[in-house]
Image (cartoon, rainbow, N blue to C red; front, side, top):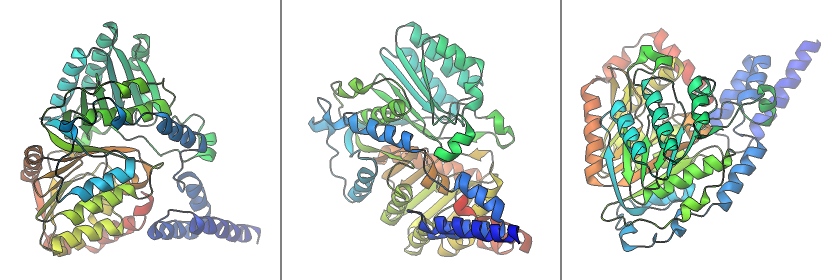
Length: 476
């Protein structure tokens, strides 16, 4: 009797906690309740480990205090120059208002960008910029590997440090755990590069009590001399991506930016750097702004578990609902909220040409199956679905009406929506959007289009597998 009574008490206590937690989607509550009732002990332990979206009170306080004391980018001398004005954002002003409401960065003009040709070209250009640096180099990566490209960046940092350039680098404590415990990390520290681990795990038992262990910093930020920044999906690694080489090559998209948008990315780096124990770099944010010249409007949009709840999914929905003619999306991981799925279906139903490109082979089998459970609804609404075949399409991009581009680190899944720290740049420019759109078309030419007839012909076993994993999608 005691085990049964204990199970009932465990289910009731955990169930009440699930139902009373704030900022929890109904489908997430239901998924946790199903797991708890089906597997009381394992479900309760899983909820204890994974049911929270808190990084710990001390970390939250430190991150918020850092944000409060840092000078905003728009107080730098020269920020109010006429060329930095965003100009006419019609009819997309609402996109940028949503972005401003999330992380506080407003749209700023005078920016220029270049879409890198591929992953190796991205690293080569970063190395060139680091080799030309004069004052500071700042890097933040979720994953840094000790492979060919990872070593190139490390060597460039050491060369810069030898010239007297101040170099700072942050990596995620779990995403880059092998690198942190390897020789290159030690060599970088010995060379004078300042290093910080984002969200260090420490003692897992203590972390389990203080906050969820798998909340990670998934951002990819490079800022050099307060004049150049990079934004995109690529980690500091080769396309072969050795930890998951059988899915290679990993196909990413990265843009190199110049202009006032650099200062917003510098501010975001400063929050992560100082919020994770790095030195005070606020003086960099008060340096006079260089003359920007002609350029487009852009905005950094940062999200994470210490930002507004459901901010990232709200951003995606805003872009989807705002599309008037064409919407094209690439994402490796698609585990949507019901509202994101409905927004995509609504876009196609109102005759917006809506296309999504996924990888044909996903490195996460559960996410791949959960993604495919949504295919039928999308296809019935008129969304075109392509599966990229040559490797793992890792690019996270959205283009709207040939004028708007969103590029960055965020996937269209629950982990990016609720659990990870992400960074993206939203921009309004026909030329750079055309370049991104051309890249998306190239992905499509290397993909296989999925038809409603094919999905309707899936056997019972495959449907059961996909739909069963979709039920626990809110937990993924």
